[in-house]
Length: 252
Image (tube, rainbow, N blue to C red; front, top):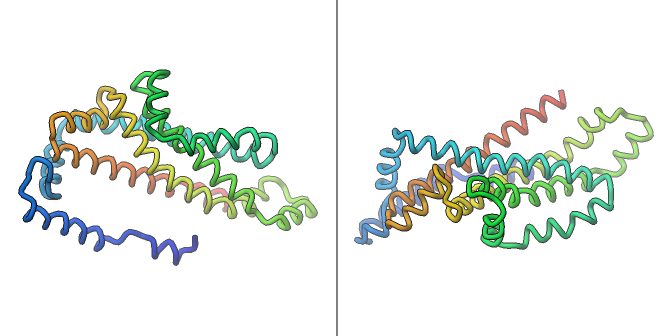
């Protein structure tokens, strides 16, 4: 996607504020304060959570679990994509596995995985499983799209492998890889949070979401959901920033 297209698809602050205003205004017409809360009520509830040690311990542990699975998906997905590009038998072997992972619902993976691993490791495994096929497929597609004539020219002029990587492979694959990172970051957080709700490990966002459902604490539910959204957004932006920094450093 070019810069103009990316700019058109970017979320604008005014649009976010508009929908928050609609949500807030809805509070004047909906009198049920048990199942409906306004953005102001959610913000106040979140402000009460922020100074507590339990909040930061919960956020830290969930972040390590889910981001750990995401980083594993990035690393292993990239390595497997490179192997599949180099060896057709590896590609044929992995093709049905990646298709199966993409097709099976998240909840099915969670139920199967909870039998095999402890609740503490469940979110890491699920976020890794959901992110793996995205990183694998996007990276492999990027490698496949490299201009064959450029490869042939590199062979003719005997360009060293490192220079090929820096000036031929990296510029072609990077947009596909960045797109994979962007999609996988959000999906890993959604799947990881769902896994925590089912596994309910101690000091986890999923545990607080589960308790909010049990005790019908709607403000608590929205506050922790907002935390997940912010962590997902931050993980995506930080990952893309690091990818771009590393790419620029390699190409210098």
